Length: 173
Image (cartoon, rainbow, N blue to C red; front, top):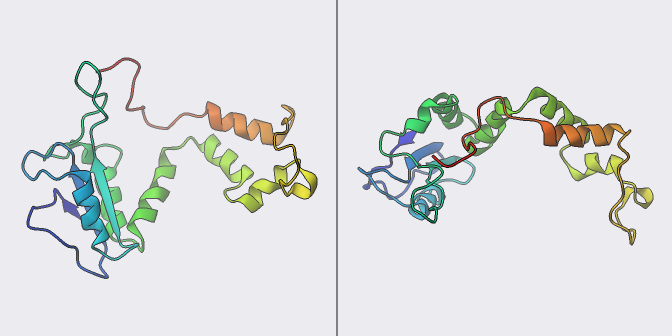
């Protein structure tokens, strides 16, 4: 795990897991996202992951809704991020490990609804109303009756919240 990429680091070693953490406002070792992404691509595919804490786009009157990390990488202290990045560095595939860790932040009812609907087209197809569930009919849109389990699952996805407070709140800080 490399926190704040030193300017002398121009390539990553091959066949080694590398997780980089860097902020867009690093005042000590400034690097833009493109340079960091290029650095990650210099390593072995599937073994490198970039955690980039960037600022949101600028607001019309200046400022940002979210300010990226500086050299101190404050975001590593939130949501068990530092231990998750360390675990990612020790896993078979750092990026995949991080994506799987996001499940921890979803409402259990949402996870259950997603599981029931399915994650791949073959699973989702069980609910299709087209002829033989092929999706080849002229009509592509079909009403989903509110009395069905499919409707309940989709509604649950839209109603669900995260298990942690949202970063963006109403109003700009």
